[in-house]
Length: 286
Image (tube, rainbow, N blue to C red):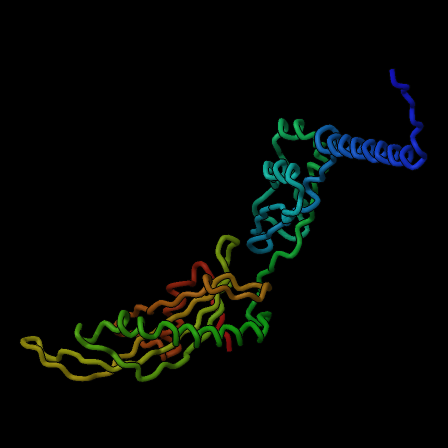
């Protein structure tokens, strides 16, 4: 029988084992902490903290929409935030200084599963920043009028081809009208008499083109002649925002009777009064 001898571990071996055991304990503790934080700890989430309030309309006719502008949450909170819906009351005919309440709803089952405690679920906000209508033409800044002038020129240059082909109806159907000239005539401010209508600016031009006209009732006998039409460019929602949006600009041919000559100011005033007088106060912009 051989003798069995027990070898006492060296100090270095004991030290190494203790370090390994400590590292293992730290790893286990870290995993436990992470697991607890992810699955068991209740997290407070402020669901109105990162909202963005978007105003549309004007002072006295404003409306509001709300969205969350923060998309930088962790996966679980993002999934929860995707269920949040916002409701604004009141939300019509708003004016600057009004108080509105933003209330929220969310998936309560998901919040419970992820141990989320929703906080600040209701928020009160004061309406501000809605643009205001001009009381009269004198309040419209020159910078805005200069922008209108520039946009009208660009609009005509961009759309002249379709204006020539669609709006010069006196020419023979095979004719290809050619632009002779266009001339600015009037700039008008339409100041709405009610809150539902929007204030407008109108630019009126005369456009002259030449083309072929059939001068015979019996046969095709073409002669080149000039025709002049009146064309109106409308700018909607004129207010202190100072903004002119492309979707608020449109042009149309003015339809007049054969006896009306809009180059005569009296005829022009009669036309504007008949078309817009009931709904707007009509002011000429000099």
